[in-house]
Image 1 (cartoon, one colour):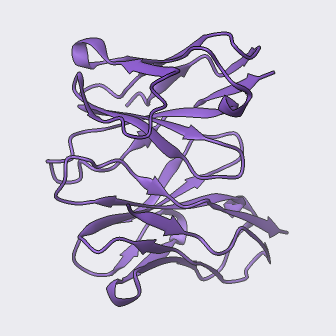
Image 2: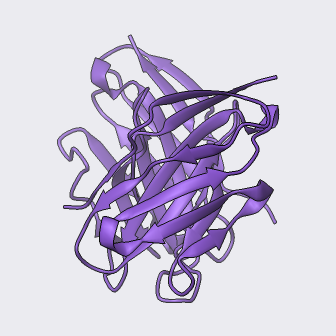
Length: 117
Length: 115
């Protein structure tokens, strides 16, 4: 079974520039998450999609971050403009459907390591 | 809001030593509990999970965890660690019976096993 695919793996940008990350979840997974993991910390949720609808974006800095999941499959996360404190690993994860038995198990991609200089 | 505490940030053990990593969460409702592992250079992988039933759950690679509801704890254990267990371990929790099923993670424990 193919896992969660993310690209790019690494990105270095200057502050105030924009950047976009892409995620392709496991086929058939209705739920998609974006997490931010700052060095030395655990992943922190940015946004949760159920199919193509947003379930939770309460921790997404909406003045600079945006995300979409058109057609309920792959997703993009954008930062514009980037700040130094956005340097982190951005993780995408997917799960089947929380309403199903075992549907809570989240599968993670390799992540995109963003460095803002 | 729920939170997860992992008290050990960095643990160094010799091979064959026993391991116990602490995890406590704060949330009064019904939760699902998880331990994830991240080996160097790899993605986060599920080690084990607790949804309901027997509070002692067994996962991959000889790991187990015990859910103690009265203590809001879900500690991870392994009787004898191997060098290949060197990794970062994350405890996570989500709320059952809500639409917001995203995981809340602890800050992680870096385990270093010396040969």
